Image 1 (cartoon, rainbow over the protein chains, first blue to last red):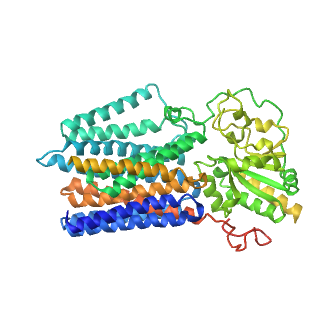
Image 2 (cartoon, rainbow over the protein chains, first blue to last red):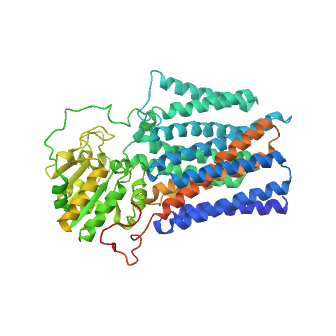
Image 3 (cartoon, helix red, strand yellow):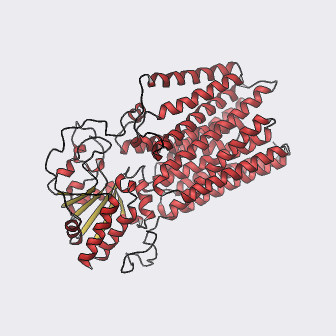
Length: 469
Length: 113
């Protein structure tokens, strides 16, 4: 090993250490920014070192330079543009798009490598073939699967589970063809068969994600994030680069853990999600109307309850995110606080569209993070709350989860029903993802304010202002 | 050859374990930024995309290298920028209130609406 190789390898290891450190610092909101900066620094030195290696080797053609630099500029520019302009509510889609391009790039690295080696007289060594094929399979599945996932979340593709007779058979057939062809390739190098592997993997990605409903999509995106990491690690094996192996493995592992945390918080097993057909609720049992009386309220009445409360807990849910009403919620909280009311937010682990998404949305609306309380912290506080204001949250507040025998039994919920009074802002009595009635709505302590989250919160704020102002 | 592969596998396994260890301590508050951060880290594939531009020798090779470079650069730049943008919004106190508790103007409007 030459001195130059030694140095570059050590720098790659240092870059990998930056990634680990960066992720480690993410465990506290105060240090998270520094973590991201350290991680960025690691990425910059890894790319700079690669640049130095390419210059030092002096093997690259002028076309190679042009292709590399033009590609990086175009891709980097596109990435910068979407990252700057994307709405915070669209984060899950964006993560999915980045998964798609990351997985796609990893697959292309392996495809290129394979085509090169297959053309050489020495043939393809077996150890390379295995990692190459794993990279191609995982990368291609991630690429097409992530595009479908992003399309479903963005509403470009029907978000409800899409299944047709025999769709499962097509799925299994694609997996068998892809893996079978890959095994054949280990024995007999052939570019033609490699194309079959690629196509089968791409089709499998589509048929894997199509039957999964929109509600489960964040879990799928987290899973595809783990897939991308694994594909990148495999690309590291293919080109013999430790930085790729370490970074890919880190992401694979972290994506795996996040996926499990998310599935647990939604009370869904990964197996259930992948088998699909759940996720929308509207197709599910319409059990004989609301079982009990529902009391509806107006902005003025609700404002009186809020203005004369000592302690208010706001429970934001997906409906708030969908209506982009985070700023209105923060505004109402601010008015109440000025009036001396103690306000905090109860954040269910899966509030919003993915874990922690609601925290991001409320942070965007300038809500200080110490006001956002996680489920275990806020649940004992509900009995002391004069008003719990539920905005667009449904299943995560349903007391039915405490009883066995319902679709959400065992799911961890916010104990909203322990508050002294409850106001629910919701557009209709419609069901949540689980497709069951929410017993909270028929609780005698509950009054329903039927309106869109954004306009309801605006009206409430105005009404509170006239009361206290 | 085999000893290289063995080293690579060792590194891979240890990195997976480090990944489990590091992530399991992150609070739910930061799960979305965390996913985004992990998402940008797999942009390291840009290094691979750069290296295949070196070994490319024909039109197909260049096309593959070009698309890989576009994809990977988009992943890495977009990932880090959006993660930074998200984390910048996390504040311990309301913006513009140096002494803490909700010191806001009487009309309650400040910051982006």
